[in-house]
Every structure is written in C-alpha cells, then in structure tokens.
Image (tube, rainbow, N blue to C red; front, side, top):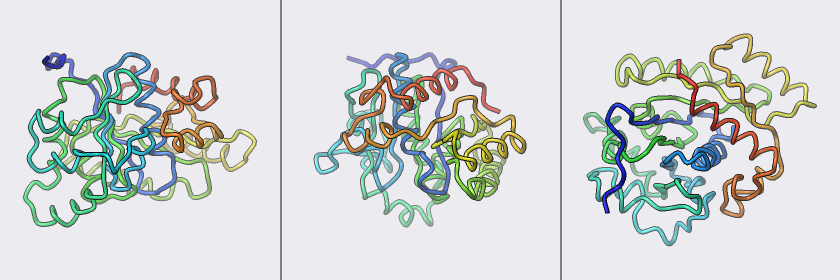
Length: 267
C-alpha cells in the first residue's frame, strides 16, 4: 500500500537541531519534540544523524538488531531504500531512521566529494512528501554531518542549556548558519533558540534567559524546558517523556513546544 503523500506546496518543515556544544539537551529535544508532534497527530520522521546514536537508543531501538540505518541509504538513496531504513516507533505517527557507528566514516568518505553537503537532502527528498515534520538530530560538532543537516533543513532550532558560558559557541553556529544560507541553502531560516534545563531557583538560569532575551529577543522561544528528573530518566527506559510520564513537567513543556513549533514562523 502506497504511503499517504502530501501535496507539493504543503510539504512540511524539516527542522535541524544543532549546537556544537554537547550536553545542551539536543537529543532530548529531538526525541521529545518529535513524540509531542506525533501526539498531535502530525506525521513525523525523526532522523538520527549522530554516530553516537543516542536518539536511536533513547527510543528503545536495539542497535545490534538494526539491519538498515541512515548509513545504509546515505550514498544511494531511493524511496525503497529509505523505507527499508525507516522504523516504526511505539508512538503512532512517529517514524525513526536510526543511526549507527558506521556514520563516523562519512566525515572521511565525503572529504573529497563534490556536493558533499547535499547527501542527506537527497535522502530526505525521497520521502519528504510523506511527512508533516522531519526532525534531524545533529552531532555535537559543525562537521560534515551537521552541514548536511543544515543543507537539508528548512529551519534551525538551537537548544541552549541554562548554564555558565551558555552563549559561547552560538556565534560560531550562527556564522555557519549565515554561510549555509547564503551559499548552499537559501531556504534555511532560524526557528528559534530553546532554553533547556532551566531552574527558576538558579540565578545562572535566570541570567541566561535575560541575556538571550536582551541580545536575541526575536529568536527566543516562549517555551522553556525545565530541569526535570523524569526527563533524564526516560531515555534509560528507551522511551520519550510523552510515553514515560505524560503528566510530568518535562512532558508538558515538550507538548507546549510542539504546539509552538507547529505554528511559529521561522525568521
């Protein structure tokens, strides 16, 4: 049975979550934003672009049991090969293309290739008409895989942990974004900056929020992700926070984020 296809002018958002700094809540947000969009009955594809494959394991997929993943279809994508690499998840409306350690080789293999930044876009183009949202979890670096994600995306979402030196590195990421937009992907726009691990009792959290609000007010999302124990527990059970504890503050925040993302216009 053929998959339901979207009309060309209604094809959905492709959201890359990127920040070259690790530990900012990028993978947590990729998993839980995707799950929350799926709960809204938005057909969503989550692509794990990180060789560490934390998004893959965070959704309960056993890497040893994976036969086809992103790397399997990366160099010669067809609709059929992308379908073979796509897995259903326990959340209705949410599909996953898992990652594996094989993706490490991409950085070397594409080093001398022409149009090396367009491979992921070609993969996504095979199935873009089947999804309302495609979410890309990038590695914590600005290497070839992240560049591929930025060239494939229509929007960039930047998770920012509420801690000391939080804004360090954002300037470099925004510089990369500007170069990609000017030279490689003019459709790319900034969806926003998402504050994560926020603790109202913590002065540093409040200072980071005010800092972003004063320096980049147009980019700051209304939704703030709180520091939440249940959020940190969920991946070890291979579940999104929506599936693990939908009543938790973390789950409620990601449901709010999904609603905001669904209607927000990127800048």
